Structures are given as structure tokens and as C-alpha cells.
Picture 1: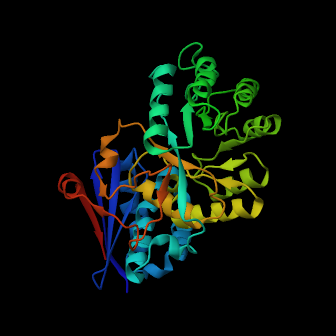
Picture 2: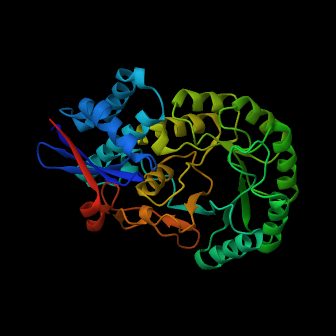
Length: 365
């Protein structure tokens, strides 16, 4: 068996699905990381596809390692985003060949359901509106944890608007009561001193975790914050380098490591990080900011990895309809959790309308 055909289906610049075929007619589906997907498609066909074409898909780990090493001149996030597209398609293929969901190929289920948190990506609505829709998510879908945005985005201590953070933190606790866990994401907003000040406020109101308090490329400052606070500090979603995440784990820069499968280069490399976290006693919560196929990949990883013991991310904003028109069926939260997948591979198929309207590009053996 060998891979003979790799094609991308690009929707504008938002997302690219990947379809892979073998010489005996088997097929697998994957996806690159979202946003700037046109750049990922170019890198995929130039850097990644030539190394997978003609190869045995069962050599997926070795192929990923080769793709990283042979393309060392092109290190960075775009290479890994492209690699994710092909690598996840290989895992789907292997699952279909064996008649097993991907999580069984990763070692099997260590949990029967995956608890999810309702994740908001909005800084535009008022704190009152945010509290109202989070309360509705808890009532409707049974979420036992939610996550809100505070600060700005790489904003050098500036808030989305003056006083928003100081208002929304206590308001969310008042609106949701003591039985719902609440987390806060600063998206690299703060200097260490400001982050510690905000972190103390989160602690006073019983928040669950504090995500990316300092700029992601300042791990030493994130560690200062994590060392100063009792609330768990999370980070790592922007990193594409397994070794950088290993250093974060080993140094206890974060209490919760938040790898992103799309940014990191697929399941094989994400699995390494999750296993490193488990060996070090660090929690792993994959970053997943939309409902593209990355939600499915993250679900399978969370099912199989012991370190993924906390709530996992589930976006509640409905402002990215393109992410929900790629594939079917999309995972749906029931009583605050996603059930165990049972179909072979990822258990999804591309929607015909997406295939018809996507820009097709192929690499063949």
C-alpha cells in the first residue's frame, strides 16, 4: 500500500480540507489549521506532499519526523499547519482500514465522555450580555464550566474598553453562582505585574484557570505569574515546536499546557506533548477555537490521553459559519460533555456543498 494522491479543498483563505488516497483505493480526510489556509495549502503541496507520496501510510510517525527534519530550512508555523492537513488524513485512513476510531489507534479510551467548557471568543458584547448567554449555555447544554475573555489581545495591559475586566470577573460569578467553574483568557494581554493583579482578582472570585496572561513569546514572564498565583495558569496554544512545549512543561511555566493540533502539526506531535505532560503531572487541554474538523481531532486526542483530564474547549460563538459547513456530523454537547465517537477514523465526511465550492489542488505520485 502506498499514498498516490493528496488533494486540498480550500475555502477562501479560512480552511483547507485534505483528501488522501492510496493505490488500492482507500481514502482519508484531514484538515490544515484554520486561517491563512491558502498559505498552508502552498506549503503542503511544496514541502509536505512530496515526502508522503509513494510512502506507506502506516509509517506515519516516521513520515512526520522526516517532514520536520528535511524541511528544517522552513521551520515555523506554516510548515506545521500544512503538515497537520496530511497527517490527520493519514490517521483517518488508518482508522478506516482497521474499522476503528482514531482514539483506539492512539491507545484506546481512558474516559467514556469528554467534559467540555463553553468558550466565548468575544470582547465586543457587554459583560451583562456575556453573563446572560453563558447562563443560557449552562441551562441548555449542561455546561459545568465556561471561559470568558478579559483584557485585550497582545494589548500591553490595555483592556477591550476601560473597566471591562474589573466588571466582568465578579459579574460572571454572580450570574452563574458557585457551582459553575469559570475560566478567563487574556490572549497575551498583560505585563507580569498586571497579570498578577488580575490573577488575584480571579482567585478572589473562585475562577478555574487563567489562560495566556502574558505574551506567548515571553515564557519567562508567564512563569513569574504562574509562580506568584494559586490559580492554575494555562498556555502553549501558539507554539509549533514540541521542544518549546517540553521546556514549558519541564520548567512549570504553565500548570495547564494548551497545545493546538493544527499549529503543532497533527496528532502524532500533539500526542507526544500530551504524553510528556502526563509524565510530568501537568494537565493538557488542547486549544480548539472553532468547530472545523480540528474539534473532532481534539476530541479523539482527549479521549485517549490521560493528561486531558479537565474540561476541553467548545466554542459557543456562531460568527464563523464556514467552520460548521465543512463536514458532518459535528460533535454536539449533551449534558456538558461530548460522547465517545464510534465510527472508524474520524467518523466524519465532507459536506457536498463544501466540496463543490472549494478550490481544488492536487499532488499525485
